[in-house]
Image (tube, rainbow, N blue to C red; front, side, top):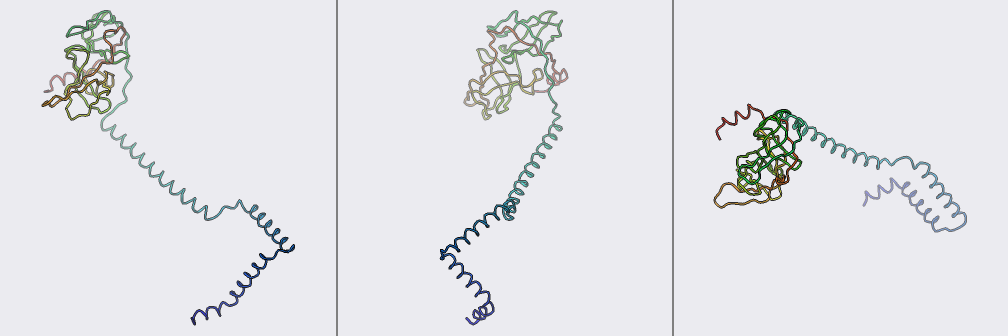
Length: 275
């Protein structure tokens, strides 16, 4: 208590000043004479004018807070940019390691179907282009609906193609969605099958199927068809995957020969590799 009194005595002038100011403000607020109203109006107008004049000067604390927010946003964007640069660098390095190259555009030769069989075990088609325009054995055949087959025999003006619906036809294929790969074969009927697909692999009805990078004859990415049915055979290691071809061979009239020969060295190596 003694200490409080000492503090009051030391600051008694300031305390009295504050007290009298408060009393004066209370008296001014409670007084409603003409002079007081004039003073109030003048004070309010002056404050409004000063606020309007100096309103362009930004608030220091608001600027400080805004600056902190901008710094945080800038830091976040800098981190994201750094991650994107690292991802781009890793992608470039992986492409170099895997020796991935941009695919060269394919060249096509249009042809008309002049003969075909579609009710045998070894179905073929005959087309009206041959050696005179550069068509050779093992060149792929496609249509706007997808893979048709490959050239198996040629003459000067004609060529014979082996189509998907042929017991001897084989092609490496994969499911687009899950990248599950297998061997495309035909065992009769309207469907082709994707063989060597383990039961644990992800294949669903409606998945698109295309040629894969493992094929030594067909370029990758050519549409084959759509998965129509999958069957799990009890006790078997592999599932049965049925595919509806995109090409309607009963109505096939116009097609294209892909003017690209497979790598002969790769084919020779595949033939000598134990299966």
